[in-house]
Image 1 (cartoon, helix red, strand yellow):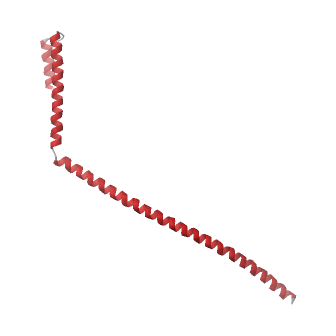
Image 2 (spheres, one colour):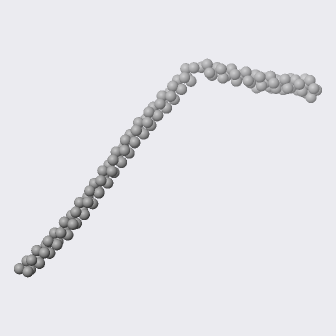
Image 3 (cartoon, helix red, strand yellow):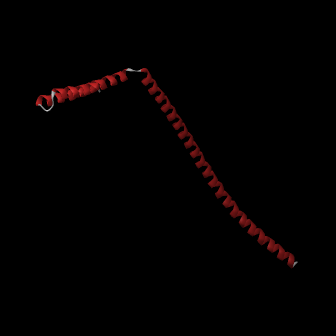
Length: 128
């Protein structure tokens, strides 16, 4: 009978140890489930953020391509800016040539250039 009582006492002690360990495992499980919940929440926020950034980038790319296409159409359809630029370039070029000829004329008037040198330089400037 003593051996049965000792076995019963050792079984009760083992059961108490298992119960205590079971309680510890349940607490650890609750903590781990809370961490998973927080992790899933953070993943959801990151997913939403990535979707918003992706939509923003898509809109920016579409805007950039439509703007580039519109700029290209404006350049091809409107020739007046080219004409203005080429006309103003010709005017500036003519004024530059005129200034150079006037300087040569002043040098000729001062006696630093002969008429022949002046005419040669003038023909070179007008021939450019």
